[in-house]
Length: 407
Image (tube, rainbow, N blue to C red; front, side, top):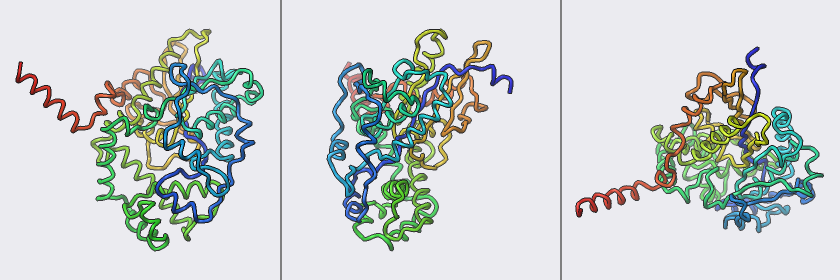
């Protein structure tokens, strides 16, 4: 009502998943790459038309090299010419559409030139970098023409150091929790997991069951392939029906929900802290800066994070709002910072345009204080320390007590 009209939007952080892509490379690839699926979904001309960028490492350093896995992917070719995990023409279209949505919602903050108003952070993966380019193209229709002279700056980080998506290589404790979660799923899978696996066992060639880990009741890998096929209007293989596809999709979502909880409920907060807490802390700090900056200052008031489904899921989980439905391509979470007439600040969080009531907040509008308080348990106080495995911590505590004994 009235109050909303008097409030002014003074900043926003948007975290988004990349657009549609080809299936990612993995042990399952030999299974599907030779099934006559043609990935003719990426035309060089479409990618070439995206705005020019200046990709930098975190402190203005040159950008880090691609990780080994991603470099391997980029050098492969699927039938039809695309590589595994490549953003498709459809994916670029989806991200441009997202850019247009963000222009409608946040035009006042975006202004006319992305180089003056937006801070862009991306994982070091071609599909997230290109997705950010496409969002800029959609949000700034005249940008492509003007960026050749002054490219849009984007910041990235070596995948080995990354924290805007969960990093089990850097965080031993997260790997430990996820291992436990997988065992928990094995023993107590959800709903019709067993029946679905049995049905797939009747349809898929034997080697595929192993490669997709269907024998371990893992639906995430097969889900990825089917969603990519479906998005690009390709037929589903092996006689998989729409109904079975829907079930595989749902089970994949429940499975990743189980992962983010660390298996049993008790580990949800710890999982969120080390999986994505550093990003959430950074977002809160970024919004704080916008809050402190005087209205006429040249403070950038828009933050873009170009990332993955594995970013969006733990973000939603941290907010107490993940319902087990896998985030579609081009999904986004926006954290809006509002200022009232009397100078009070509140946060509103939207997921794909729908307001969320964050756990710890009483309505979709949450005072900045309440929001910060709600997120306090998710922010790691010492990430490196919290990421040590239990075994590591145990050894270290024994070393400490041994030293005490010799004082």
